[in-house]
Amino acid sequence: MPTNTISADNNQLQSFQGQNIIIIGGSSGIGLAAAKRAKDAGANLFLVSRNAERLRKAAEAIGGATQIVADIAAPPPAIFAGLDRIDHLLITAGSVNLQSLKDQSETDLAKVMHERLIGPLLAIKAALPLLHPASSITMTSGQFASRPAAIGAVVAAAVAAVESTVRALALELSPMRVNAVSPGWVDTPLLDGLMGEGKRQVLEQTASTLPSRNIGRPEDIAQAILFLMVNRYMTGEILHIDGGGRLV
Image 1 (cartoon, rainbow, N blue to C red):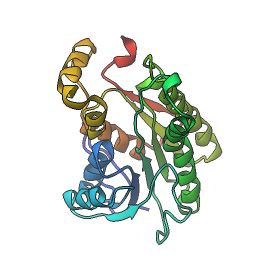
Image 2: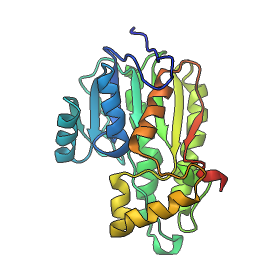
Image 3: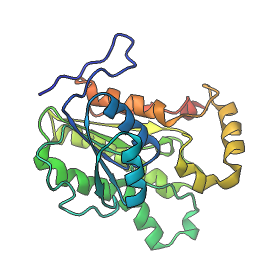
Image 4: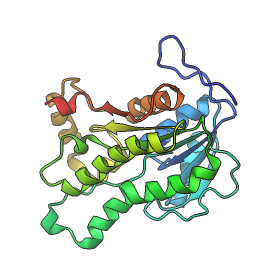
């Protein structure tokens, strides 16, 4: 099995040569940024998205990747058909629905939970026969788990459940490692739909309130994700990358 190493400055990943990395939600934003870094480090990339056209463009952008069209809310049991081994599984898919509880239908509630929790669990279950003791699983929670918005109860519940799941799976699947990144505000296409034309102004205002005084980039989160993949002594952890957002 190839060995992962990190350079002395702890920033630039040296090698994922020959390793199979599956990224669910790899067609844009954080997932695509992680795919680019992993590809540069020699990984065999398998990108999963429900949008075939966006998936094709993402694969082209990183110089080639196997494309798997599937919806994380209800991934088919054979989502990983044709693979013989998974070294690292990353799950970044999931929308953000900021509505008050009274304005959400049962369908709305179920959609959030399926995208954020049930779908990822089904994907992990499907991957288990292909994972091995040195594999890693990285999930995505979010700042709402520890600092919820006034109209974000459902999303907060879903991402908090992800964090509990990570800790439980780290024990259940040991010695395989299971971790999560918890991003704060990150400038991704996901926010385009959430904030519309006012996105830039909102992000600038938000940045001024953070201890870091800046908004995250997909590359910032991707760097942390690859760190979790490579660090053999880290499991059951939630790595907060939020510019200090949960402190203010």
